[in-house]
Length: 274
Image 1 (cartoon, rainbow, N blue to C red):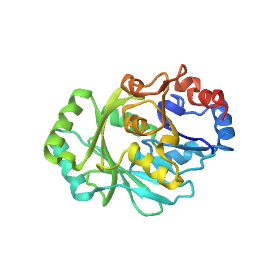
Image 2 (image 1 turned 60 degrees about the vertical axis):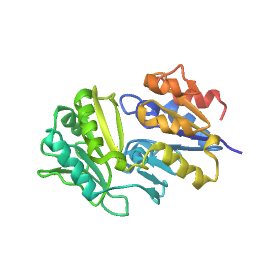
Image 3 (image 1 turned 90 degrees about the horizontal axis):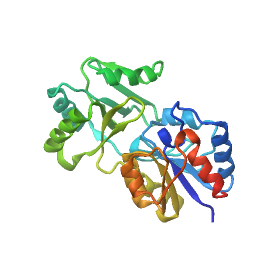
Image 4 (image 1 turned 120 degrees about the vertical axis):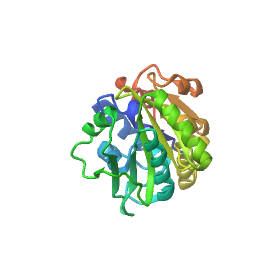
């Protein structure tokens, strides 16, 4: 029976300049000929599709931190949304503290996504938006409100401020949301991601497991950050790249000698002879 490999993208499979080296592409595609390979990422379908266009993916992709599981043929396998009323209430709590999120939402069942951003962006948010300049799903909102089907709300800023915000949100909404506070390696800040309580990479791994008819114990996963923790606990083999967060390394079965910028995932796949 073939092996199943699932990798995170940013700072795991992607290099820090958001490229995929010719070597990593060659090793990945060779492995996909006889094995099952896919991704588990915080990125949207639109962004992931752009990165993966020259790579063979032969299992559903876990996207938006597990809010969406979708096939490469654009079939939605599962989705988990934050309802509009809850999203609006979250925005109001943050607004009282002077902070506003990005809202990533589904516009229709054809996987057309919306990326809503507030007029009151902070410095970190402006820097991220510069990376997305030209994307056709960006929508500036003078009065930011959630949509009907929201994958996630994401705040960016300094750790202490986001800790205060998280405490306030948990006091108001408890376990109606999932909260992930983690460092944002590209911009040198932190982000607080709010999700449906059953939306995370661990749940996405279960969905892929059921879809493939393979137990999670058969799967090998790669990651670098705190949103990979749940997936690491469920998979048969969990592998952290050298540059991974120390908390994730402590949970990993294997810590690679190579970082994302040194093609760590591809070097493991090649050394494993898959």
